[in-house]
Image 1 (cartoon, one colour):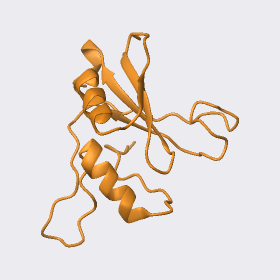
Image 2: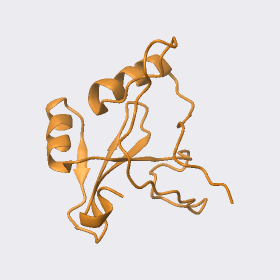
Image 3: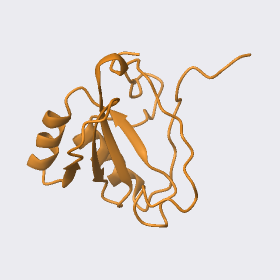
Length: 126
């Protein structure tokens, strides 16, 4: 059976798409989609990706009106949190260390939930 080999994109609605593109670029290092074929799009490092539908009534994403949440892998959660806090962005690191790593939660300017994940040991490079 053929299978997909990775996430090709994440598409969602925004009140101010341009401002949100710039926020993600400035604070998380995500290069916006190029407007021509000469520039390169954001490229991720190889690693595991979790694909998991949640129950419709979940409160894990925050407010009821939020239908998605993105989880980004990071190398150093503490350094990323310090960088975000220095920029005035509130971030909460989960104090629990899970078998698969550490997590933190923040929200973009449109209050979309973002989870940062620092994989543990064997999960870090797969």
